Length: 465
Image (tube, rainbow, N blue to C red; front, side):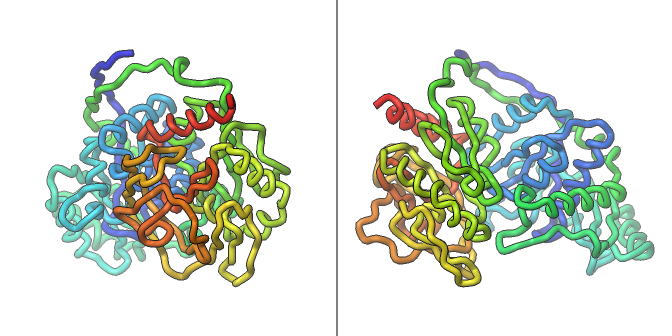
């Protein structure tokens, strides 16, 4: 094992927006489709903690998309994750979709955790998407403002979205060209091309064939209206990245005797690709479906991620054998880690948006009801009780994103997390500890390697007891 410095030359470009809702995902998958059609191997990335947009990237490129989030990962881990993803996928180019507006991050005082922050960390050129539906010459003023706001962010040009017609396109393009701002695409408004949305955003492509078909139709349409050759030239002009790496022999890390079962189906699919890859570095990973399979696989630990258990609650409830076996495993002391949708599944019941109540696993002594209010935060917590992921007194960072609430929580419930930022279960606590189970609203990123190492150690103790 040793530490060494490397320089990495990777073609890369960030697709940013002036604000949310300008069509970043549509433009991003359109560019991915165009580059894939030209023979490029494209690695997708998403700035921020979002799980859904990466599913659209993956459906177009065929390569698992990764998240880049300074808050969740830390700056050094983010850079390492980017380089490792490019290397492992053998990609020719990285296409990085931004989050919200280019400069929107953790606060109004600086760019931390924004698309601009990640673009600067990766020394990546930026293409700005502007919704031109309610403007013409003013798009040039908007673009100039974004370019001048922070010259360290390398905005190389714009793509105009939702353009009405030829005359509208000419007004906008003339204004931008007059100011020396390159235009890399003019995408006409098309009501037949729509990505379907639901209460947490786009419908994940894991969940339905329709969502995948819509993604492909949108990507094809957008690809015909952008200058992919011009954008790839910009991406290839990105300078080499310098990074200090640690040489590690993975064969010395992986314990081939440990198996972790991961719930993955239409109901549970909110996983960071890095988390699953990190797990597979340390143990054998076996996937199963709480909807379709009769019982979990033979394993030494379970990971039940987020998703939409409220949408398919009736189907989950119908599989009583699966729920009974998961509860038996947990009561036997098997390490079980559950996040958000996984927490909801482990509760006594889920009352869906129509008011129908469905029995769930019943391991966590609380009931889940759907709420009209969105809980969306970056989170930070101190470990107040040691658990399968962290020791007492340590700190963890994550995020929460849900429309549900836990009610009728047992008074003697034990919690791992003392919330310093974010809501958690009740405004001050999160992370139910039941036997050797940790179930929380908070999502974590395993780039902070001590989390997965502690989980695997818990699994190993269970397997050898």
